[in-house]
Image (cartoon, rainbow over all chains, first blue to last red; front, side, top):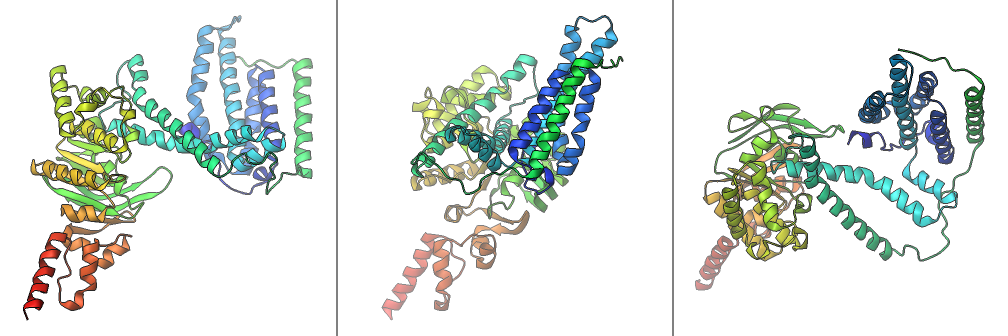
Length: 255
Length: 275
């Protein structure tokens, strides 16, 4: 459940929080693409640490660390998988450095999107989607999904408690048994989510959801000069990264 | 016996739910825990089977510190029935649902089928034995949740809000059932808001507010203490409220039982009529 902790939005007014959500999403996507451009350790490390100042300005470092901690188990798995598959490489040192790079690449992705979700309110997110001319039903579905993540996480915890009270030991048994141990958790959780969604649909219909085709919003997003500035800087850095990729030999770190 | 000694508990999100709770519950007692929403009632009972461990202080069940035992070991003794039965039902049939706990505790097959039979009869669920738990009505699901815990015959039974969403008839049945369990020397602990229900059961009452125990004693004393009750967002039972308002007629103010009230009032009316 720790991973979800790192996606919970808390209201604050730092420069990062105030950025247009579309701009933030754009930045996250650019980081994502850049991370895929490179598979060497050095640029990925730079990409990872370059995000630190943003996190510190937004003052979400604690939550951010938590989501990274939650993601680190997957990063370790990625590292081990790459090590086992043993990328066709001349030296073992290179294999290690490559596997490490893949793990870091994953952390870069988690870090950038965690930063996005930590600093963007679900309402802003919905607005951004709407103003990007995505049909309102889809925007609503998306924001509702985001909105219900903590609710479901909470419910999952209660279900775990209830089943442990009936003698269920999640950590007991071999791998297959452990996976099966989650059945008593997942069934009530899924049934509950389905029930809840049906209730939500009824509640929405009784409040005239979809009665009018054209909707107006109370707030609308407007790009400010700082937003344009961030977009330009990001694009410039991205072009630089593409140039480096194509024209510069990246030094290999071998461990 | 459950011994709670000066227990503090803070949730990971920083909410301090218990602030120095000290309570002792003897074997065979019938206790209700009452208090406003968020008073820490559920947090407290989750300490009884080790789901939560105290941040400070200690909880002992039968002399064992809950920090030294697993939830499964403690649950064998302390059966906790959660408020919302939908949080635990998952099996294909009612029978399977009841057998789940028994399997976890390692009972052998003949014992399991015997216990399942016993629990089905006890809670009047025999006709549904092959039905899916999800097809049952709300009240039946609650009974099934109760059956699935009682099946392994825990010494101490904790019920979290058992009366919510139950009609009057179900409540009467529940009361009879709880009294019967208690008569069989089991410790029964009920978390509830339902003042009328408590008044009819006459247990020991523990009142909680903001993570602390604010009153502890027999039901007739606690439920008629108007100031303390209203402080924890509860009201005395209706019959008590009438007697409190009739205090200038020299009537006793510690009545929680309708039968007792009727006796008193009719005696008074007869006396007045004969004059």
